[in-house]
Amino acid sequence: MMATSNHRYVRNALSVSSPMSSTACTVANDAQPHHLIPIELAPLGSRPFVSIITSNYNYAAFLPDAAESLLAQTYSDFEWVVCDDGSTDRSLEILRDLAKRDSRIRLIAKANGGQASGFNRAFESSSGELIFFLDSDDAFYPTKLETMIRAHRSEQQAGLGLHRVQWVNHLRKRQGVWPSAANMPSGWHGELMLRNGGVLPYMPPTSGLSLHRTVADRVFPLPQTPKLPYADQIVTRLAPFLTSVVRRREILAEYRVHGNNAFIRKGTDADSILWEIILCGNLWAAQYGFLRALKPGAEERLHSVEVSPYLIYLRYLYARLAGADDQRLRYEEYVGQMNDGNLIMNTFWKASFYLPAPIFADIVSFLSRPSTLKQIAAWLREWQE
Image (cartoon, rainbow, N blue to C red):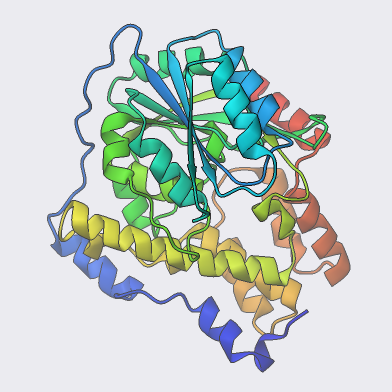
């Protein structure tokens, strides 16, 4: 486990760079008139044609489940545009067989270029009024399309759709729900994101997202860089600057947890938290450039990511897990900004600084993973609401 006092790189990474300090950005926020407003969306018809887009790489073992989940949908006016990103397993063979079975399945094959490049190619070839994302190791529940289309039609000017996902293991045994103990956002959050350093919390992963085509046309093409490896995080950091959010609390897809998940594989330790902190800075830089192109001047109102409650939380985790010298400072910063109203969790975090390091690490690992206990807690919270 690394120590901050011996690693200049760690100290630099923890100080997320930005063109403006948070203090300067606050001044600009008061002085600049460049307020964000949702873009206007073309109305959806009573039965819109929709596209499901997938970027696949070496997930041959899971593709049949993904395909069967689409063919079982209660809503049939869709196309599945799947881009194989240079797989070296049997993915292409399986996808070609699937395309022969159903004309709604469209296959694109290309050399490996990363997840974003695959989604970009799939989106280029799509024609739907709504765009649904599906990771090739995940699966939709039968009413997913029908439910989310109804949601988008009920809120015609909400161009980003969200729903909960069921975490399952490689055998599709249920392990938990995400987001579990907190509500996903809904409504317009563009201005709030500017003030919160560009972070909108409690967003589902790829297979819980959908976009109105008008919004997707502004978000795509996704940046293709190793600094931004996850397409869903790019979408959820950019789309809320353009449009309102419509959410459904139902669980409408499965997110499969297995040994090859890039994010899950990192686990929860000091190194993985440091990596997440660096990713936050990279995403902030992408948001800054996106806002500058979208509405020149708006980027100057984007507060530094250092003010984000999420980054403050990550810095505290890192300090504790790495045994850093600034543990108390990071602890005081974190507990000083807690305001989610969850008495039990707030009590735990206030006491967490005094826990022995191994116990703290075990609890953080548990909190970051799906579990039946957390699933029950989510159901109880929904019932109370």
